[in-house]
Image (cartoon, rainbow, N blue to C red; front, side):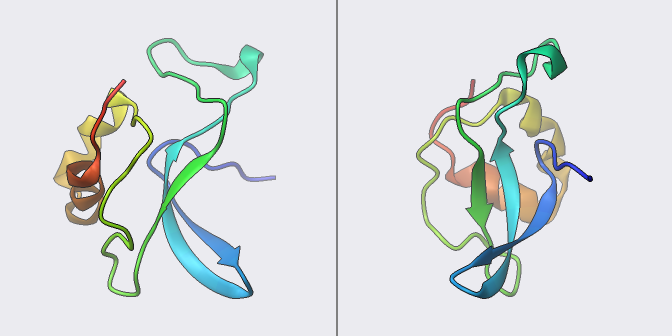
Length: 87
């Protein structure tokens, strides 16, 4: 079964509609954790509009600082700009 990691673009179903989203936080099993990548207690995503812009205007949960490496990607940099905290 394929798994999504931090920063991956995924397709999710919400109320019967298919939406694209970026994974910004992932609950990882204790044995599968990587050094330097924080694990959250929930899975967190940022929903995207049809054009690829973030649907909301704020990201309330802290985002792992490891995702700052993807700042070169134009759509993902918009998500990073909405974040308040980095861990």
